[in-house]
Length: 111
Length: 110
Image (spheres, each protein chain N blue to C red):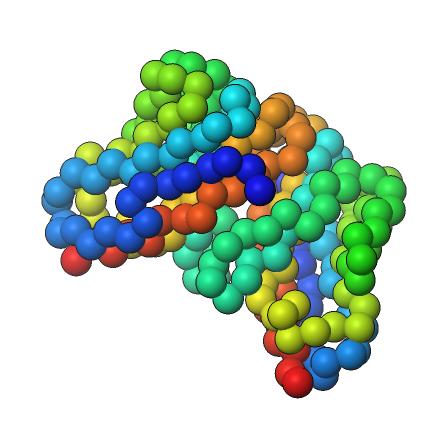
């Protein structure tokens, strides 16, 4: 299995609070991604990174920001969490258009 | 953007049965992957198959890129095959971004 960890694995927070999720890889892959999974929508791309300090938006980026200061870490921040951001968040890594490998996921509940 | 449709949405089998899952996509792709999401939520890579045929044990997959579809075959199904099977593609104009279908929920009964 690809070396991908996510932290925290579970989080409960309140509406309006900031939340940061971390993805850490040990594979030295150039590309990293954040997805969210919701019932009836499959997985949808939030943001992705194609190198250190290089990021771009996905299809559901509103309300989220990302940062990548090191190859191995990709952070997803919810500046002010809302109930609509309750979801399961997955990180993935890849080399260009090759196989994407997924982390174990983070379950976030916003009350 | 590229559209991905999977069928059937739900499938219930008896242990030992065979099945075929289908993935249709709306544009040319340079990446197609099949995943299995187990009941614990883990996403497991099954195949990277933008074209051609691959086999891994009881599972095999075929992608006909010119006709914009892929098939996942599961033979002699086992209860551990239960879960959701996703097809995901990267369109030729999508950089490296995967677009997922909504999945096929497979239940294998003993």
